[in-house]
Length: 181
Image (cartoon, rainbow, N blue to C red):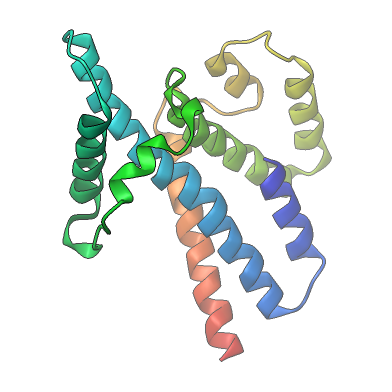
């Protein structure tokens, strides 16, 4: 949410098309790509690891590397060459293996995107609602927390809205690029 709020601020306070394109490109590459694509790949990898463990199997570095490469190859297909060593990214951050960590990022960003859109549309009322939700701390379950923020994550609608929002940002980047060139 903080990244989106800062992006809103930067976009509102500049007329420089290159700056706007940079802000939007940063949101796509560092916020949405990382939290959706990177974490989706990590979740797919985790699912394979948990399947082995749930069946009573053992995991070791060679198997984890093999599984990671398979996930990368399946996801990217022939669109991307998977460099040697890419399969080692499973070791990158140990906190990935604490529960279903990768899912929290995409769910959180989906909620943040919906709340951000509310803030841009409704202004102070939506800001006040968001602050009240944050004040609640850990009082609510994730579903209740999202609902208090005005987002129903029990349906696919927030995710579909977020995907549409990403598409709109990309369209805006393309438009700015055409204007600059």
